[in-house]
Structure formats: structure tokens, C-alpha cells
Length: 154
Ligand code: FES
Ligand code: FES
Image 1 (cartoon, rainbow, N blue to C red):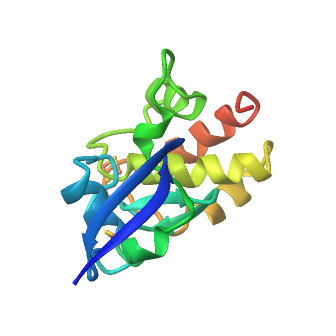
Image 2 (cartoon, rainbow, N blue to C red; image 1 turned 30 degrees about the vertical axis):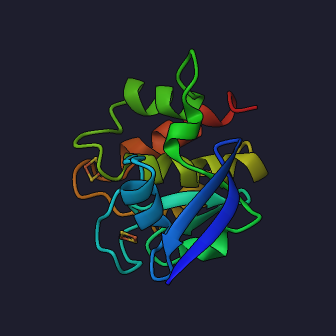
């Protein structure tokens, strides 16, 4: 069965016709050729597929695309602009990226945190990123980057 879905994607109206079993991650990667959200575990464990739905981090692999109707979705591609987003800049500057597979999800989880708590403690950062797994960097530099970005996110 194909279902129509109208939602806002990275600030723009989006209409899609999707198989009913498609997840938001399927829609982004296979339907819309947006590959920023990564397909890691596919079962809600790793956080590589994290995107923001109405400002809150969700796991794109666990939410059906049909559930996006009428809502606002932001992916890492939505942060594109003339300059790097402050969180992206801090990740690059402070060495918080190695393979980069976890990075889009990390950055979007961090963005949601900083939107509600612009000056979090390291403990609060670790808690906010607890659902985002990184197999490369260890977490110290990632936490450092989010703390550094905190004061510069508007
Ligand atoms: S791919 Fe969604 S949580 Fe791992
Ligand atoms: S930088 Fe490779 S998984 Fe995090």
C-alpha cells in the first residue's frame, strides 16, 4: 500500500508517496536521496539515524514515514548554509570526528540539547548523547565539542 505524506523537511514543504512500511529513514535515504541520516543498526540501538522531529531527536529507523504527516523534520542537510553550524565547526576544530558515521546523529542530538539548554554541563551533554554510539573517537572530544559550541548556538 502506498500512502501520501505531507510534512515540512528542512524548512520546506515536502510531499511524498511512500510504501506503508517505510520508515522515516527509508524515506530520507531511499526516497529523497538524503544520506546524512545513517543506517547503522536499523533497530533503534545506535542513534546513527537520529533526526529532529518537531525539534526533538528521534530514531529515523523506528518511526514510520506516515507518522511524519503535518510535522517538521530536520536532517543534518538542513544545517547547510554559507557557514558551518557552530556545532559542526566545533566537531571539526576539536577532532570529534573520525569516520563520521555517528556524526550527523550526534550533532542533531546536541542541537536539540543546546536549543533547550544553551550552557549544559558535561554530565548533561553525556546524558543527551547517551543514545548516540561512536565506535571511533571515544566520547571525550565529542563532549568537549558540544560544550564549546554551547555558547555560540543561537
Ligand atoms: S540505525 Fe536507527 S538506531 Fe541504529
Ligand atoms: S566518528 Fe566513527 S562512529 Fe563516531
